[in-house]
Image (tube, rainbow, N blue to C red):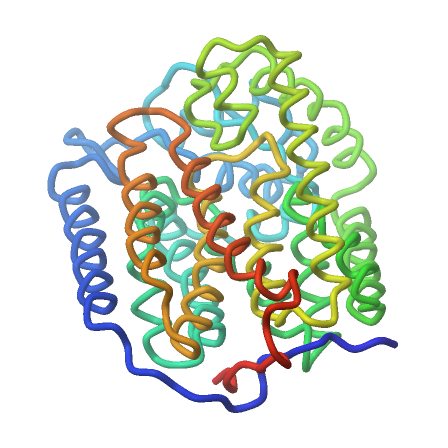
Length: 409
């Protein structure tokens, strides 16, 4: 099997942190903490001023788990029944739906969480899923600053507020990438577990083939197949039939009818629809971007000259660009791409424009709540441009023999 042209295990020079970087991250951490405290004291997180549960994304996870524990896993996909369970646990109704649309293997997680009271499950899920995200960010950056960078990312608050799975998705993508050079089986396991959100794994088979990473490829396939088989044994054929039956309805509601405001979709598809573009144009642009990203990544991962960290960063960012269905909490994955860029900057020195550009990324992610526009898509494009700028000299043959990164740990 061909090996990658660089890895993240060979020691290299370690530069001092630019003073502005830890200061900015510390300020962002304080903002995240202050927003969370405000959410608790002002009653716009978890419970309102009347002690009723605030309708938000996590309620569909807990409710799906409750239906599993009650012996009706297939009913988790029924929007009407799901909402009845959600209204019962929250103590109040709400307009619209928080529909369950994950493949049946994720029902295992939902069932575990439903063993606990709703508030305990909510807080526990956020806290526990945050830990592997922290560990992966530390491993990528290669020093303790990775913890601070992880906690400072603006989407941390968004993901915590709604109880979503952005930490888990980022952990699995980051774990796949950081483990690939040394532990391909572990990398494949992480990628196989990512099958709970298959839209973020679309590019991985392509780049694994391009890089001849067959152990990762086949391990991921085995893990995903085993998960599907075990969920079939646990939840029955009916759960898979319900998933297949309800998924087109979910796509119709969110990608055709726009039941969630178009500005919430942080993709070129969402951007086009947000500005009034027709659905056909939105799909055309999405497909063109996806094909361009796929071709570029295949070439990058096939190269023996481009250092591994740049390959990993490009794949993390590319995973966000190729899916039309992308909400702000999913932009947690962008932290993985940023961490690889920061690692390179700490070893080779930051380009003059890179830290201001990362400041722009932060601003674009933070102003979403004020504008309600697909600003997260802009943030992804900025990070992708930074990666492309770093790759350019390698691609044009203007760099000398490649230099590997420092040990992760």
